Length: 140
Length: 148
Image 1 (cartoon, each protein chain N blue to C red):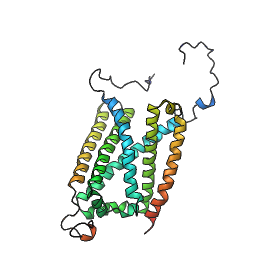
Image 2 (cartoon, chains in turn yellow, purple):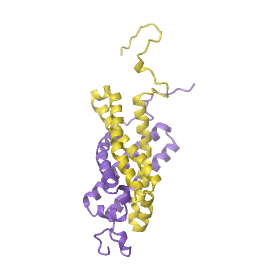
Image 3 (cartoon, each protein chain N blue to C red):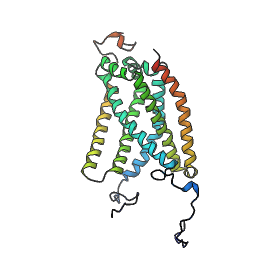
Image 4 (cartoon, each protein chain N blue to C red):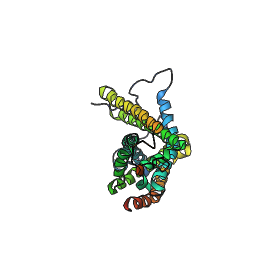
């Protein structure tokens, strides 16, 4: 962008793609990628804290570990595991997208396309995981 | 009028000499992230997709896995990489939403303390784990235990 712009101070007609989306910040793919990365990251972090503690119960006794891990096998927690895996899979694919955007100029220019590829890969991965997992959770 | 600083304005001046820790933190997030994709996807596949998935997880399942040093090291590496990755991400969030001061120091101190405690705890659990504790009911133990 040139530093010496001497155009008339009338707001130019912006191309539609650069207009803010009507929501907070720019409201476009890059913002939602950032928001989702942050929210999923925090959620995964707090699960990790709990998961290290529950796994540490194997050092207490088989009964203590089985009692706690049994709560992970209930239908409600089974649905929670779908949400957890969904968060992890998004954070993983979007994190790889961030790395590509950082190191590869093509990816920097096409970060919006990459966001939709992340969504597509997330859908495919979840289609592979969710039916299998729910069959395990809801069967006896 | 309140002046909102540019998003790239540093909260404090970067040190002029020595190791650039923020740069290494940035590199660590990317390097550990790539490894974690492999470790965690593998962890989820083996524990949730193979066999009866989450229904099959119990003391005997963990004992069977950690009888193999491969899974011990897999889980310990995952523990270190993931917890430091997560804590550093939380540090970024604390930097974004708090100003330098007491609250920020307490939040970062809590992150550091919980990370150190859980890494030490988790590493000790994996390497001092006894899959066949004496006096436990035989039906709860892995099949390779003498009592089972």
